[in-house]
Image (tube, rainbow, N blue to C red; front, top):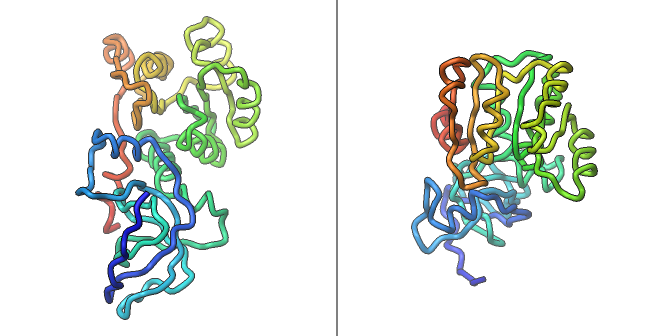
Length: 263
């Protein structure tokens, strides 16, 4: 940790006090130098969080003291106690939501919402399959899909507390929770008697896990990759492309925000 003197507050700047900031895999990737965008050094880590406005510059119009704000884009550096930021670099939000929800609003729920909206025309009764179902994105997918009447088939790794985790995911709306190994077993066919084969697969892992998701997509379905926790490439069987005409896509919420920043 290092103490750094704050710059003076400019006319269009705000002084904020950080209230909470999470640690996401992308934050670690940025520190490792493997992320798609890297800040100029020296830099402060952290791409997400919520802060409270303490003071405002003389020409600031959209914010006032006491407002809660979150970063508009990645790379702002949220792992600090205070910061002087440009008014245009933050977005205000209501402060009547839980603090931890506010701190984690800008990346994972947005990623989940866009992936459920932008790749397939999902209707109530349709199905989505995803790995990393207990991740931040995975849990947001479960809740948004449940609110829309969409079935979710949620894949998690086996672990001693599998039953407790499965119950917790079902409590927030998961339709099915199964272990990765179960995807390769014949009894998976029984599951698809209870709900249709998925139109959409969401991949945050890569490697064999992604290949298994592809195997269970319906004809013409899409697999969207948004993460690669296994650090292994996505292997697409030729048969899936030829005989099932599946679509293999990627999603990066930072790019989406940039492309839609004037919308």
